[in-house]
Length: 301
Image 1: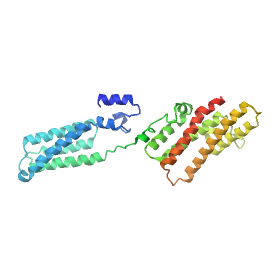
Image 2: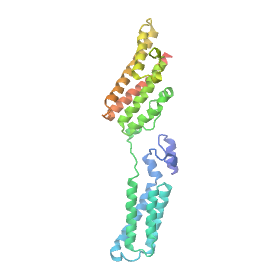
Image 3: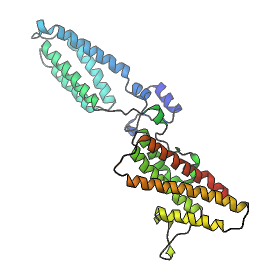
């Protein structure tokens, strides 16, 4: 990889470097062009195409005659450039196609028609193999969601670290237009947030008269615990403390109700995929909920 590309990567940390240790990550168009040296690759391809055309032009008249040594040397030289390229970029199938072409061209007294066949077969094989190597393009609008652990902000990342993997995966799904999967991960984020909220408000849950850990409680039970906190706060003596707590708890209840309804909707429409605007709406509401947890609860401490 050129120094220019390395400099670009160092300045843009969101860009992911192509390397043997990181083969399956998305890369920018800039990295793709430079890492694979597309300028040289297209030049070699054009040279080989020209050599094939020259041979094909003489095929009708001299098809059965032995190919000229200088032409064979030129063709082999171009093929060796491809061989080095494919070896460098760990493309063994393409390398096998080079070997096959070089083997054909090494036959004693190979005629012009056989040379044309060898070049043409090589070019067809490379085209087919290149078609199997796919790169997914992400629009500039969606790229902002990609591989972001801080998608909901640094405060959310620090306050609710257990939600970070699902926050990142939800963003990746939005970037890739996997909208239903994005909502799935957003619901997991919201669940982490809901349990964090219950602990922050010191919600106590019971089951059959015994303490029920928040980690094992369902959404309705946790939301009911939050609502009980609100009812208990309303019985406090009037004053600024009561008003402040009621504002915090009311905001928490509103967020929790939306999270619950969204989760129910997710379940009831299991056979109907979400479209992007719906997933984006869920993303914005879950983000607001998580940011409320990271910032709104400070006033209670």
